[in-house]
Length: 262
Image (cartoon, rainbow, N blue to C red; front, side, top):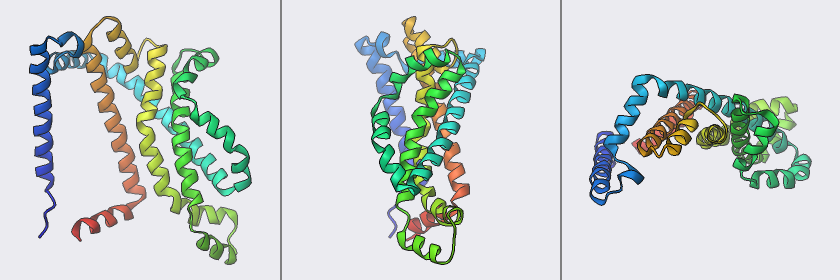
């Protein structure tokens, strides 16, 4: 007998949980007098819809989206390329390992002031910060995926006369693509973090600016409204990556369907 909960049951449970949390937040904050610190869902909704109604939200969200997407694109491509190169070259990986580890250990937020000095306070700085943040997540996953390619299969294909380009395109990349998309999925929120941190530090537009501007005015509902926009944007970007993964790896959907039906 299949005891797996249906999608409708899961959806209804989520709605009940969300409604319970919102009600607790609304009445709890009013009862304890915490509106100044945590606001209320009603005030936050009013602030968010005011931003939407005036078009201010879409203006700032569009800027943050461009910065995050370009940072995600540049950082993702660089991470895939470097991960592939180092994954295929053990000597190069051993030489660069301490340098990459040291740079990876550095909080990327600490680089923001340097990027302001080097690049300025324009959109380019936010894109660079987002790209650097994304790079290491994608690089580490790609490198791991390339190193985990079956050695026996590599040996067999080499014996069949395949060159390095054929090895990469026919075996290495298809084998590592799951790792690559895992890194891309993980890096989506970090691309947003890079863009938003850059906006908070030095910007007069973008969702990060909305957060810092509202906080400077002690506008708690405004801060939460901007955070809701950031969450919505992150979910949309995650959905886009998942759709790309479904198109590029259709066999995963077949495997998931088999697991459900077993």
